[in-house]
Image (cartoon, rainbow, N blue to C red; front, side, top):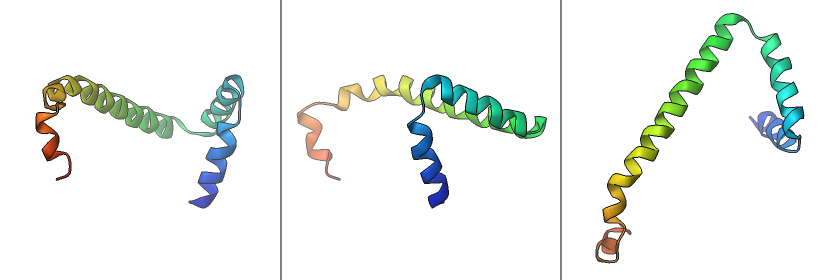
Length: 73
């Protein structure tokens, strides 16, 4: 796993266009099933993030001084 962390830190140093080129090259190395699986995971992650963002408003009422006593539970 440390190898992946190292690669990730190196990728973070790349420019946007370099990252895009890297993604293109990596996708070319993957077969159709691997790409479809990756896209399904990405879709699921984006849907979850959208649902969490929508639910944020529901809990806004709890963000007040009166309820701060529950923050440390």
